[in-house]
Image (cartoon, rainbow, N blue to C red):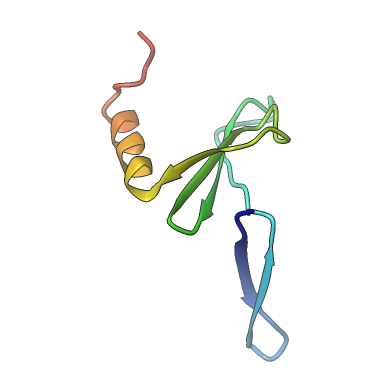
Length: 81
């Protein structure tokens, strides 16, 4: 299982680290329809999942594959048209 590490500042300013499930994020542009791509950082890459089916196994990307995916998205290569 991949483990995400979350950190915040404790009462004395010391960093507090929590290990557990991945910290899933989504774009602020998603709205309330729950039809979004969610991503989480993992050691050596990224995880991606469909917000409609969060219980399914996520897709795993290596760091280089994630960069290639983002590059293709920004160039419009995955528009589906």
